[in-house]
Image 1 (tube, rainbow, N blue to C red):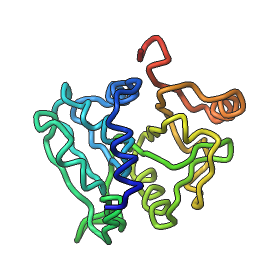
Image 2: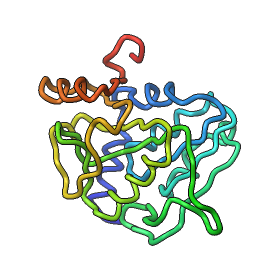
Image 3: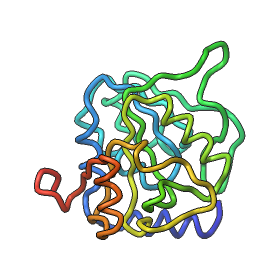
Length: 195
């Protein structure tokens, strides 16, 4: 595992505002969730303990150890190539002898959120996230405020493709206006209903 990833994971293990519980509140019992890689989604997955009957489909190899067992009906890990530095698989969003996956909600972590849209540092990861988003009825993006106004290498989609942005702090004025124009709802501990 890369040193940068280990430091990022350790830094995220420190107490921080509870965007994870705000994200977990968006999930309903008996939903099917698509959960991508990245450390940002792990705390949200761990906060699903009060839920029941969830089916989780993920490429994040840490999710099976983080999700509370009582919340699960089923858990599926997607195949493909393995990026060991990030502990994720990269490949198609389907299983052998199926046409694909259909989900209620996609919980997506990204590398950048700007007025031009979402982005990550890996082109194959961007392609996989696009496929996850296309497979879900609702897209919830989890992003630390450090990702605001940041553009990574691979563009995923415009802001209009997401339904909810969950973060620990509100976006700045320019990004907030772009999110409002794209009709993206906000969630996080800075809002009265999530704090």
